[in-house]
Image (cartoon, rainbow over all chains, first blue to last red; front, side, top):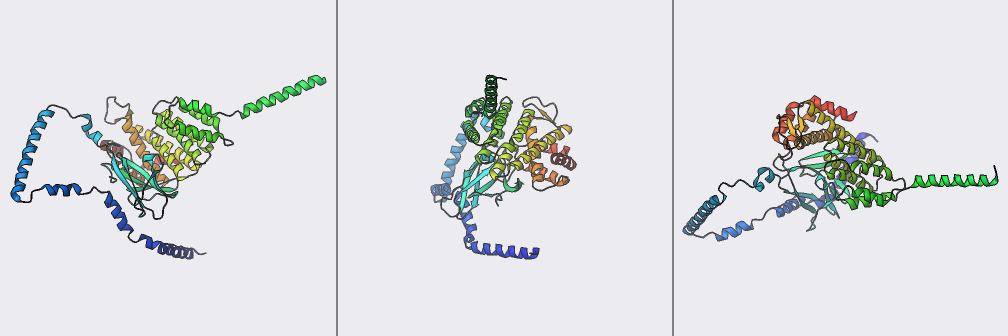
Length: 189
Length: 252
């Protein structure tokens, strides 16, 4: 078979495969966005706070005055308490910057039975992802200290190393892995 | 020779053969592994022992060499985690149903690197990745050897360029004398970037590209991993041809 025939055959076969599975991709983007949206902090506290604000302008001015006086009182008392006291170790910036970041791993895997993430943060042993609402979007949130992390998803035993949310990819031992930078120097969080 | 003498010599010969056979087939017992591992106080003692016990039941299992590796690792000073990771390499290989024979020379190479004080944690993770991917043991071994060579070459390159490694906590006599942990992190990240470049299909003569990859990775890392002043120091003192040299050393 000539190379151009082979290429045409491959293209046709792939086209048929994609067309056959296209219905499953309908609304996939919306589902992923919705899944991510569910994970964002909710605005309920703001709603609750807005309910406490007085309805009239005069009432709001009064509330503001009381709040200002209270804040001033706390500032004075606070400065008296902490006078001449050095920062404790827990306040050191270097330690604060080592704090863990919650990193969300998301992968669409329709009809999958088992999805895990493996990476250098878990010594390449499985951490399971969950698809609680069974919409085919699997997620796991893993706390990680700042650094560079390589990882891959394993979907029903198959290596899946090119996460679209990754900062970069590496290929070792013939297979791709994804990379996320976590912390102030990176994009991962 | 009398009949009695002949019979005595036959019995003697039989006993000798029996003795040699018993000695040759003498297996290291699970109890011996248990005792040897206990000397290291490993967090994964049970898991490692279970895998080695499973190995003992297989024909041709290189128990004596594995025991020699444990004895080699035990007295090496330094954190237990890296020694444990070396043994976990064998554990995971056995758990995934692969033979460990081809990995044993690599185990001894890693032990030598530990004795040398090389920071091998990243290489061990790379090997665990290979096992997770189901890569062939020979591929993993070759990858480890290449990465170990690069680690040594990069360390020596920094020494050559006047960047030194001093014990953590000691006074910094010159700005180019870095505490051991900071020096090691630089070496690991540079070696890792060059390794990734080569394993990803890059060629050693593409020094500019390798340098760009190294610079990009170092700049993207958070400060808790590498300090910006250390990144500037090292990028000022190494050049693309240096990376070509280290890459060639790793591939030859």
